[in-house]
Length: 133
Image (cartoon, rainbow, N blue to C red; front, side, top):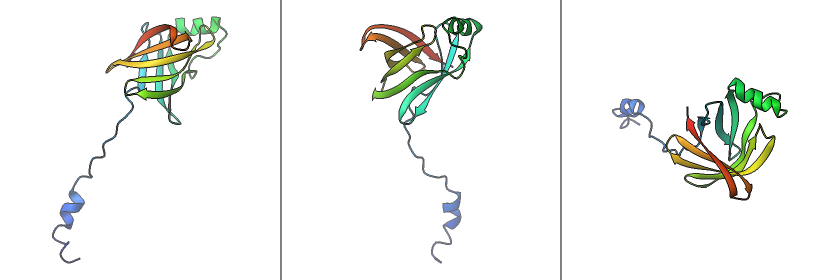
């Protein structure tokens, strides 16, 4: 113990070793192309999910017209599993249609996600580019 005393202050003052983490690049707050909906994406039990955290009045009205009483807090992206560094597959809920669709998300740029909803598997898809807030 006596031989450690001279270096003990250095060990205490040394910064902890950095632990490298690979955060999911899809996590964060994203807005749709019309800037009418913001979602927060997060890890939900090992899958990616996304919940509406902000909505413009026109989005709220469209959802209300489709029978959705409360848009904020609604789960829009569900059960997405990561299939590559830049791609996830899951289910998207489209509030103004009141329907869920098979979906995939592709990270097309550091601050852009392309979210696609598809009628049949990965075919007959419609996509939107969402940007990070």
